[in-house]
Every structure is written in C-alpha cells, then in structure tokens.
Figure 1: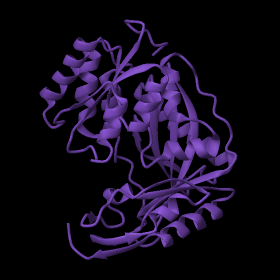
Figure 2 (figure 1 turned 120 degrees about the horizontal axis):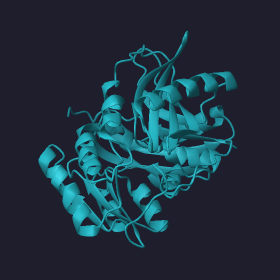
Figure 3 (figure 1 turned 90 degrees about the vertical axis):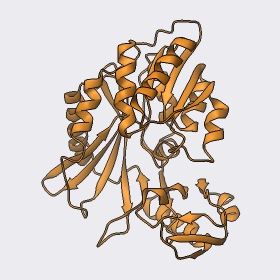
Figure 4 (figure 1 turned 180 degrees about the vertical axis):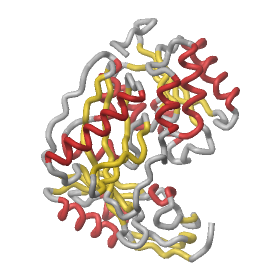
Length: 338
C-alpha cells in the first residue's frame, strides 16, 4: 500500500478491535477513527476509553459474520471511510478484510490473512525452548524491523509466560538469523502493509516460527518498545498510512512488563497499588479488579490483565524491580474455581 489517499480533507479510518492507546494516537495525528468491538471481548474499564477517543464505538457480535460485515459496510457508506484495518485476532479478521477488500479499502487482500492463519500452530516447539517476539511494520511491501522481545516464564516444568523484556538479550548474529526467518514468512504471505507480531522459538538448530499475526503485539509490548527505544510503534502505524517509513533507534535501556502472579480465586482485599504507581522506575501499572472479582490462575490469558511495567539499565535490574512490585501488591484471595 502506498501513501494514504483520503476521500475528503480529513482522514477517516475504521479500526476493528483497536486498543484505546492506538485510537488516541491516531486521533492526535489528525485521523478520524470509528472503532468496532464485540462487547463480550471488550473489557469493561477499556470500553469508555475507546469510546472517548473514537468518533463512535460500534458494538456488534463477532460470531455473527453477516452482521459484522454489514456493520463494516454500513459504517463505510455512512461516514466515507478511507481504509479499514483489523487490529485484533481470531475469527473476526477474515470477514472484516473480505468486506473491506470488496469495498477497495483493505491494504492487504484476504488471501494474505488466510495464509498467515493457516500456518498458526503448524510449527510446534518444545515448551522449554526460549521464545522471542518480533515486532515489524510493513510499508508498501517492505518489512521494517522494530525490535525483539524476550518472554519471561515460570521455568520448568510448565514454562508459563509471566512477562516480557525488551530488547531481548540476543547477539547480532542471532538477531540476523531470526530477522531473516521472519522476513521470509511475511514476504511469502504477501503482506503489504501493517504491523505484525511474530513469535519465534529458539531451538539448538535455529529459530522456528510459532505464529505470525498481522497486528501489534499485545500485553503492552508497544509501550516496552517506546520506553527502551524512544520509538512509538502505535503512532508509527499512522505515519506509515501517510507513506512514512519508520526509523527505529537502538535501545538505550531495558523495559519489562511483569504480570502479577496471583492465585486463582475470589479477591477479598488488596493493598499496595498506590505505592506501586508512584515508584520512580514504574512506567505503567494496571490492577483492574475490585473486591469480589474472580482472579484467573497464572498462565491463563485473563491473568495478564494485571501488570506492572518498569524500566532499568539491565535485564537483571528490571527483573528485580518487577519482583519488588509483585511483593508490594498484597492480595487476599479466597480459592474458588472459574
């Protein structure tokens, strides 16, 4: 996709499953943005934030494919949308892209997403293999590498993900080999425009791609990139729509997100969140629970809702700071099953 060509003097986008951070940054750069979400997938505390920075928040059932496609088509016709971009995952992507392509408003043909989805899970890797995620931004078919992020895990025997560290502590040779594998996958898919999040397992005989998804990394990975490199990946998506190509600085420090490792059950009481929020090296924190809420077990994707983001000069420093924040959060949880 080349430079963005709006139908009017204002740039109008329809984003499907966007974060409120992404919508806000687009609005700050002159785009008018309509957002589409399935209300069952949009977290309650995020809904008002997405709505506040969107022209309109459109809620529709993503399991109703015809209804989802109609929402896309109706919004395009009503507001003169210039481009439709899927920002999430799952079964909503293909119907959205298929409808947008028919309307001439998708930067990638549906076949690209079909090829990327068909390879998900085909390359299995042992749980104990270290993994990194690779963030890229493709502009007019050229894949620009933003950075690599390492997984933090519980270690043996289950290796459950407990957070992420950016940049991943890799050698130059390791980065070159991983980048080559990711570039090959993206090129083979025909991906022409947009961010991508590729998970790679590091095996003794070389990297193995586990998944390659056409959206920004979740779990605040874009914030880690911004803290470590001073590069705003979310804002860069909108710059790319206008034809700009990313210039990514080298990392000047490390950034880490750590999920709060809480036992499964019902929250009775908690303290410490205010102290965590004002700690000098904490760059972000979220604890979206109130007394009576159910807490998911470590390893459950729902457990990633509560986290702390820290900065530091080394991976060891950021690990210690995440550990300190986890100690500062004191929660009384009564064991119950979901």
